[in-house]
Length: 105
Image (cartoon, rainbow, N blue to C red; front, side, top):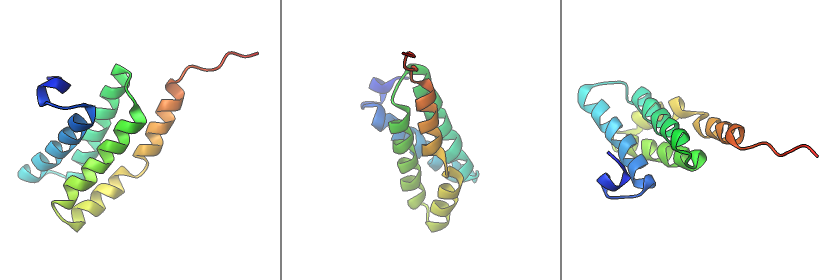
């Protein structure tokens, strides 16, 4: 399944993936925060593999996770936020390490 299969761009796919994972977690009584973290890790890893903008995807995924948690309630939002501390910073570190180094003069 690709981006065109879900009728959108990468932003839409990332949000849909994270939101769907969280909704599924609620349906089966799973740990919403852990599922959110794993879904975000997954979209970041996929983005890394295809050479996309990791930092942007991380921001979109985190926002989508918090929005999806907000539909559940304040406790879910708090749990998701606590689980996701550092995701954006981690994505920045991955981005900078993946960039080519400047040649020494």
